[in-house]
Image (cartoon, rainbow, N blue to C red; front, side):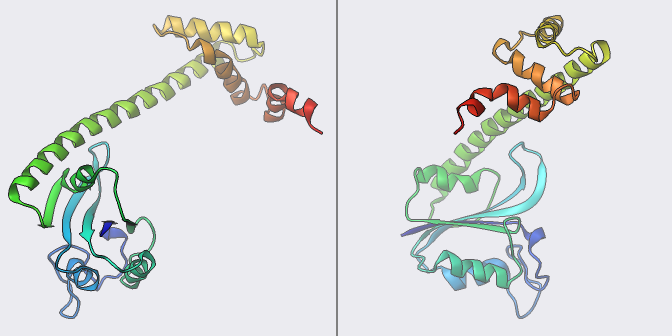
Length: 234
């Protein structure tokens, strides 16, 4: 039994005569993606979930896409499936992604991946089981989005603080090149801003500033930092 995961982003699929949206058709001779896909690759015993998503890991709008998880007898090779996608204008990772494996570490979580936003189609699951999966997936999604946003904001704030620090040094001490003096100035600036200086990284912040001001070249930095390697080289 095989586990198959597929992600499709219709706006990056180029064949305008082939409908990548589920349950629709653009041509009398060409059914929608799901009809053609299931008739080509799946048997009647396969379980599956099909989900629609329109937000990214930060909970913000993104390109609409579909996630499909399937478990069952799938004898076709990944390369064959890729050729099928290419035939209908889906080329490259932006358009689609396929993962096939014989086992998954956490099957429950694997299925719930399709339940975190909008579940469209399903087979092989009871209404009760689907309800529980959707509830768990929605909760997990909410916590993960909050964590992702917090991590991103922390990184943005860190970068903004660096920019403010460098502006202060450029404005007040543009010609200072003494590393000991610069480290002192950097530590004092942290304290003035109500922040604990990153003691173990003050030297790196100092070097970063010196290079950004072109008071030190990368060649000089490498020669100073890695002199011991040059000395021991054969």
